[in-house]
Length: 283
Image (cartoon, rainbow, N blue to C red; front, side):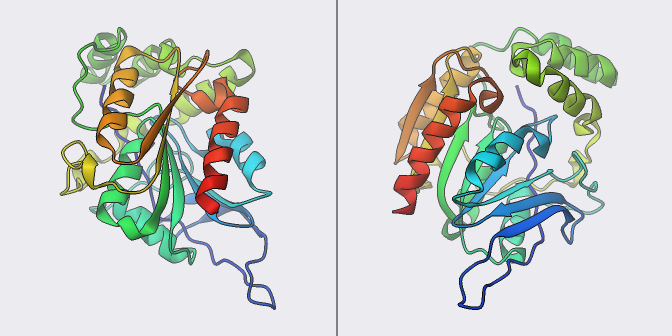
């Protein structure tokens, strides 16, 4: 399973109060210099939420609402996805995020990536470790990882993509356990997947990180929280175990009855685990 993730820079000027402390940010539906759509809300240490593949920042609405009272929360659409502009020149997701932090005037952040968003989070941690305070890696997917057991939907997905039948590819994905969510979120997930331009991204313009993540996990020295859904596919559990073993400061939590889109399936446990990690990280 190799569905690329995309992270991108985001523009916003954080306002400073008269006493020099950060004021509450209320920036929504904004655009960065690279044409990325984002929301910046709340007050306090920065949390950056990176959505998964074939999705967009709408998946984080409840998480933004949950954390904005205690943190500054940045959610955005990866380049070429959601409401963000498609790339027209070479770029890399990890450089984009570093540029984003510069644009909004932040030196570092707790970065929370889900599925393909984990790739971007770890790329940034390796390429610019000073910009990463800690990591939350949810339902991880990494380029180059070859699981012992491929997901059952993969042959049908690859067949649809090879024939450029993107509508069928969307349906294969939507009917898989990867996109399974409670009924109240099903319409949102379908809308995100059907509106996504994931299959048509300009992959030839993407510049990979010269420091491969899987070969350099021991160099990621920040605290890491791994969140895995109990009901996620075997490949995700296997990768979660690998990351726990090879990251120097990682703790893995398996969420009971959780699936791949963990924040939508088990939001209470998801937010509780991140909240406790965030509190320890902020001390």
